Image (cartoon, rainbow, N blue to C red):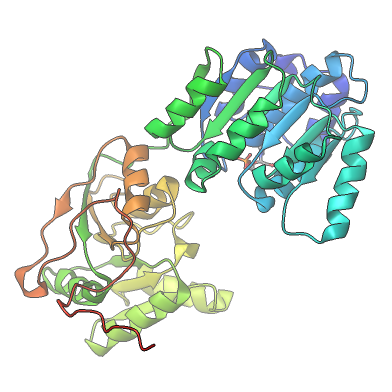
Length: 403
Ligand code: AMP
């Protein structure tokens, strides 16, 4: 779908072209028309789908078409300063020719940034992008006029709830006029999110961008383990069967290096690949892997997208990837073309919650495999529970603290 099809103001189209967007992404094609009609929206979409422009473009257009007289019309609430800055940067580009103004306000700066924000907010700005705490600090001072506000956007709402911002969000909402358009974007939709959406949104339309599903030919299983069991389990899986070509993904360079060292010590023909290697070194390693001179590649996510090695027998997620898309990209290294593949994920206690979110995105749980008896019992899979330790319980009591 072309941006011209939305009948945006010419000045907004000029910004879209200047920034280099040609076609609308799926979330933009689905969300922009109902937002232009004034509907409330719940959008399930992750970062990377184009969701920011999906709400910025129609909101800028609606503000341009209204009489905007210096009072604030839109408020975008986000969990982190990084996201606030990122959205403000996209806003700068898209709104360049439109005359719609914006400011990002977030905590963590010095006193002078607060007073700069205060000056900008007092003189009036069309769109405010901010983190909850900082917004409340400004709202409490009384100089931010929100009585003309027409659009509230909650971005990465699930993260805001996870970070404990529920009450702050409700407080911010209490400052806003009742009659307004509400847009909520979130990668996941846990029940607590539904509850909040019921309070804040009015008869919302749901717009969902399904994550790409992994190929059905991939056999997936997860091992629930303590960190101390991971190396032994990797060794067990690699020795159980003759494997030509295996990729093991680690979430950090240091864990990739350590695992490669351990496997080499056990006489596996393996190499590591991560951003500490020169481009030429990475290419050498990859070539050897493709030519089967190397059977095992221990890699960080540098390798999860865009490489095309055929016929990988096994993908191991030594650490749980950050999100569902990364998971799908990683396990998609196996079962390419017509082959079938196997993907195992090691889930320690700390990563259980993250793994549950991935399962929610996939739409079904990943089967949990039993650990080999010689490794002992692993932890139970209880993603709702808060736990930190990466070691099995020893049965020892804690020493009392010295006074
Ligand atoms: P987001 O999901 O909003 O974080 O966007 C991800 C990236 O896609 C950002 O770098 C955007 O600038 C870019 N982007 C958003 N919409 C489009 C589009 N229609 N065409 C090309 N790039 C886009």
